Image (cartoon, rainbow, N blue to C red; front, side, top):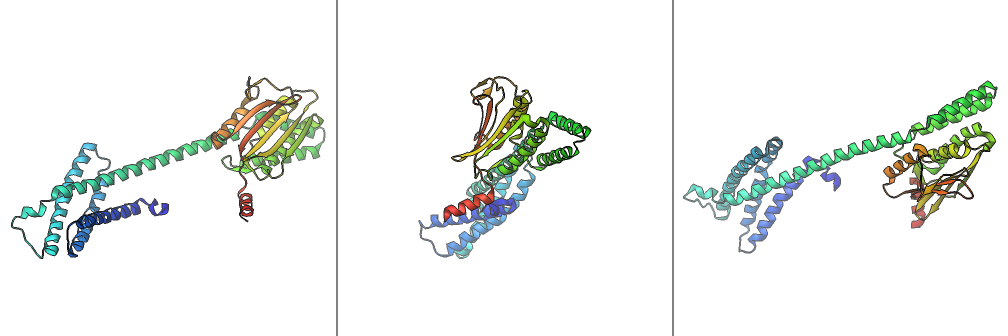
Length: 366
């Protein structure tokens, strides 16, 4: 049905025909109150057909005057409606007298147009419906254009937020590679370059508008952490706690990276002995829970929000991306880790990859 009405030209012909068909049906039902011969059905059919035919030119005239000043447009509509009403009334009376009254001829020619006021009302109704529907279509088109523009801006904002990689990470990585080359650790330097290349390729080619399976996000996180592992060596401990079945859950691409980056910066790099980072994923009802925790010095928190801006733009960008993708159906909360450190918890709707979702649906139906 939507495709049937999608084309505006087709929509006009359907509504135009249905309108005149409705006119014929209503008049036929009204005629049942009085005794009428079968010939009256022919008269009604001809009246509806003539009305259908002579109002077609109005469409093209109204299209041309659509952008005229209102007073001129109203004047033209009234004059055209009156003219078409007079013509239609004459044809209707002629059909009625020729078919239903067997060739009756009135003495006064004004009898042919005596019912023009009634027909004028019908033509005004047709014109009102035409302009009403056209105005509604114009509003819908403008609304669609506005939504398209908003979506484009929305996508641009998401891409900007997603692509705000910390330049310090690149500088530190390149410096580490340079150091490895200077001390002849070419194999390690080569591996580090390869991982950096894979990580940058992932970050640049994954569309931030689309969600990716969690296993791909974990792959990117491991690439990032392996690069940092070369820098910090034994000072960095990494642990993954991924509940079985969550690997196919869809998440925004690189949603974990800024959280891990903050943990490295504030919990590992700031401590002489380094620190540990734990990445957790589990299901909770219809939600997916993600957590990045560390054993660093932590920070003051009030109601899940840090009191200072120590976390930089990472958390702000993450929250803005989640809000743009999930509206209000998400949560991002900071809590204290035990015995020390910080936890960043993300809750988003549990959405499985399409193939996995179809498999689960098929099993449930069986």
